[in-house]
Length: 204
Ligand code: FE
Image: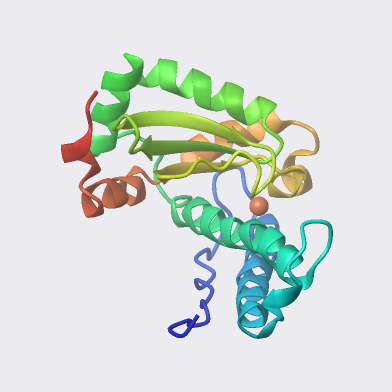
């Protein structure tokens, strides 16, 4: 790819513990994110020079690079939303709140589905605006590149991998999810809604 540039990891945004999440846990988690950025760059660099003539569905270098590229890229992108919207006051607001109320009837009904998705997924619960029907959907994902839905914009991203909470919570995933909502920055999510004109496109 002629115009490729290396991705640069976001700066670590936290200075102290969040409500229910220690700085130590966030620091460790952030290192995993930085790893995804590094591996994305490494994979995309190798794609440029690998021998494409040996492509093979059972095993080939290009095949493995393409398989792991989606894991690394989604690992990078999902964590950028997750860490980006973790320093708020948790109070639902703005255009996104109105869109949720239209699509679910109430914020509580939406939250119930988010929590249930987070409790049952093995990787992520994602609130996405899907351009197929111009409304919001909650998608569950069992790994960065399993369950990803194309042509949809990710707005709220809940990481439910054990690494996201085990240090502070052990197996108590529900308590961690409650903390996630308490720290959620709705302004961050609303910025994406406005940036992409999703409030205008919404067909709720
Ligand atoms: Fe994570």
